[in-house]
Figure 1: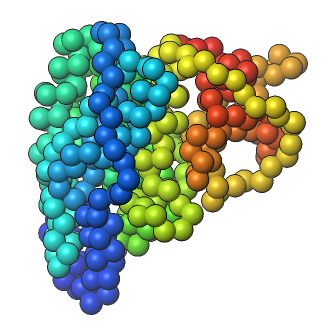
Figure 2: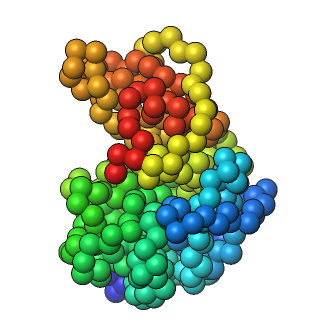
Length: 342
């Protein structure tokens, strides 16, 4: 929705929208407690670089996603670097939260060329492999920068969106930047993301891709998670920063980095959908006993983000747990997924 139309909607609905804007303002402006930054490990030229672009609410100097990711990499002795791209995404004015939201989208569009020049182009010149992660309106910065790129990015290894604050009908006008076969991994939360479910839907007639997923499946690979947009320690939902470890596990494995470990003893068991307690993080095709491939869904526990399970999905929709444990690489290896398949 363009800014003039948005402003018109806000003016008409202001008696009803103020509580929703207040929710948005409070969730986006309060800093998450407890995370302590860890110095980024420095690897060689071929080590994977993770670039995180934060969302709405002004400059974020120490996002919890980056802290979680750094702590995981240090604990596992992986020499990857984590870059937090700090940008002014518009501070929240509680009394004018709708206007602040519109401004943040304009800021994102204006920031994209700088992000491309100072981060993407620099990593490409240095020949370093990298993964781009965009949260909320930060996904718009990443998307617009990719859309403005005229040739394939040789160093790009993956793109992940978390709670993306772009409408579900968003798609590339130009997709030359994306390596062949690569799609944007979009983690969206229809159940737990209150910012999208309440505030975003009042500010836009079209739902966000961070709530319902994106329509264009040639560009996006959608996965349903149970994450709050900006969780503050209430209830059972965790925020998107809890996905940091899972994303690192997946991207490192595909880059050819194996973290040693083992799975837990597993008995094949039928399980329910588990929308509240499990994040769906990847779907893979694995060799079957009879030579045919089988579809396996990888899931991360929402309140125990270091615990994973693999479910074989039958033709009838039956879900059978075939592996579990705290090391996702060990699960992938047990499933027969080759390391470094990208």
